[in-house]
Image: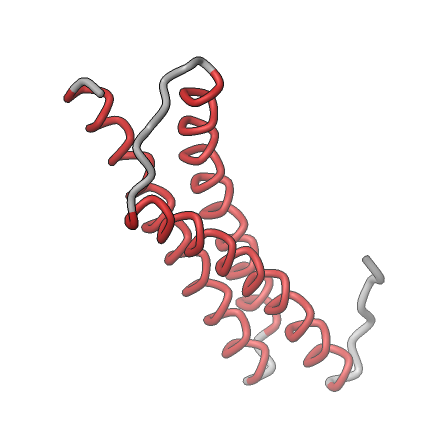
Length: 114
């Protein structure tokens, strides 16, 4: 693998880790806001988490596109970690949305079924 390809691969891996971590943090902040009854902030933080996940998916798409084009990357522990980090963040975001909805219901707010 050429040095330029390695750099691009590392950028994509770090994009997964960074954006996945940011998404998880925002989702956690949404839960904390909902716990305090601040549902406006909770909803904003969930939306922010979604934005980070879009950015992470864009990084992942770069890696998948390169693979589909025959540019086979060496699978490293860092690459596996980045994929694991993304999947954990997606799961955490989904659960955070459910927890925010639960706090809203406990506060007597109407919640849309998804």
